[in-house]
Amino acid sequence: MLKTPAYAAAHAGAALAPYTIERREPGPHDVLIDILYCGVCHSDLHQARDEWGGAIFPMVPGHEIIGRVSRVGAEVTKLAVGDLAGVGCVVDSCRECEVCRRDLEQFCEKGSALTYNSTEMDRKTPTYGGYSTRIVVAEHFALKIPAGLDPAGAAPLLCAGITTYSPLRQYGCKKGDRVAVVGLGGLGHMAVKLAASMGAEVTLLSTSPAKEADARRLGAHAFAVTKDEATFTKLAGRFDLIIDTVSAPHDYNKYLGTLRVGGSMVLVGVPPEPTPVGAMGLIWGNKRLAGSGIGGIAETQEMLDYCAAHGIVSDVEIIPIQQINRAYERLLAGDVRYRFVIDLASLAQPAA
Ligand code: NAP
Ligand code: ZN
Ligand code: ZN
Image (cartoon, rainbow, N blue to C red; front, top):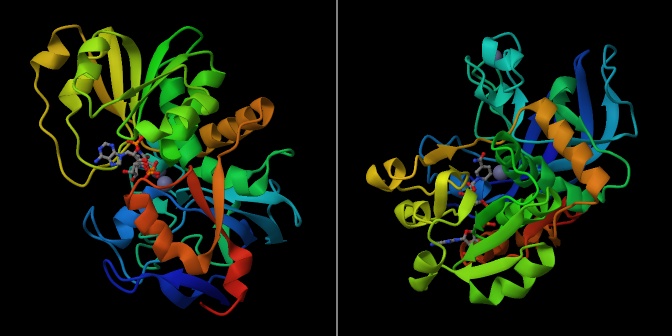
């Protein structure tokens, strides 16, 4: 086993603190990745505080992982020692069921092995995420990071990038579409960049008036404040597609009113509390309210290649791991521009 320094939450809501985990020795189809950077997703915070229920502790969060391959198993063909590789939200699945064969490994019928707060497919061995110095993963679940992508800026693509790219593709986002992005955080700022790169006319719907200049710099053509009720009347019937990235409870019904006939609202944000939805707001206008969960491995690779071709990475604030608890507080306060990324070189240093 490979003793590996990490940061873990010992129980729900505990401050993250130094912790040592063991990674398996790489098998014939595994790669060992020395982690350079790991993005901080709001899902890390939801789970470290057990806001979705059923969390497994001690928990080492982190599913936006970029690192350098340092060892490969004898059968590995996809990656070589020295390559830059990524790991997202899923580290294994059965790879045989109908869903896995459709390249939707995250929804494996047998239950996928998530990168942390989950177990390996043996359903016993806990998985630990990227707030650590290295990870061992089956090559199928490691992504190739195309040349030209800045490693720190590319880390958030592994979750924030794919989670917003996938619904834009599923709903056929194209030139001239009117797309609204709700919430300008980690996912939201990727949704703005990606939708704008696909030629959409992007409107950012935000609770934070101070984010307007950033929204426009990131590619939004319009900006509206959702605390102002007049916004919903002004924008009634406007959008083909809404990507809702908000992490806290809010009233979906108001946003449905801003869809045009036949429009779709896709939830990617996961507020811990449910929100009632009125049927008539969907019926009158043939509207759709849908969800989308990360993306499969093939689509994640497609997204990385797309981002390399279009020069898209995340806007990041790099932090040492010793600042992770403070970063969670800032995330809760909406004070992130626009993704914290941990520099894992800091984990070799003594805790502050
Ligand atoms: P984040 O960086 O914290 O951004 C969330 C944004 O939501 C905030 O910046 C804020 O934007 C807005 N917001 C926060 N509280 C709000 C409130 N009370 N009312 C309205 N807006 C509010 O979080 P993230 O990392 O992007 O993650 C967003 C959500 O997506 C989380 O729930 C996360 O768990 C979920 N997620 C889902 C998937 C999936 O597969 N579906 C994958 C990854 C993450 P403004 O200041 O602009 O209002
Ligand atoms: Zn995430
Ligand atoms: Zn499967």
